[in-house]
Image (cartoon, rainbow, N blue to C red; front, side, top):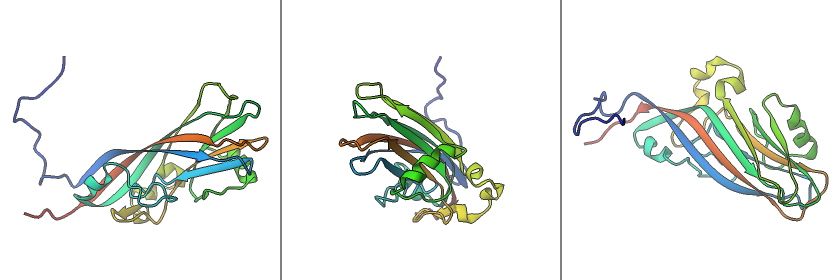
Length: 208
């Protein structure tokens, strides 16, 4: 049975908004990764910066962020999940898909050697995509900020938090990469579904 409350009945909040509020924010994008010239390609997102999660585009605040930024001045991202979906457009060349969190910016131009090295990263997920016509490949991964940096000081160090108008000084990244044995004319289309556990605090002044 559905548990509902009577009309007009609600839980009282302290001073309209609580001092801190945790929110789950989601971001979705689809990116073509070209293997037409090189046998590797990658794309990265920055989950620790909910104000601008895609540094290649800029200005990519996660949906819901602006609404929370109207009430709070500072934010901190505790954790993130990533779901990546891709299919191989080649009928002859298998492609390996990587998903890995990194505590340094990999940029969007990794070398073939660095992409191969992703397989040795401790939190890496990888799968070989089937040939054209095979079911799409899905990789799911998750990470917390304190785990990727290895220091519980994250909870108190303001280098991991930021004003809602910018990004933190310390960030970590989701890197998604593809690697093949030969070049492929058709780009690999990859969808990214990113979820972050974000806390907003430093309540702003509420005007009349």
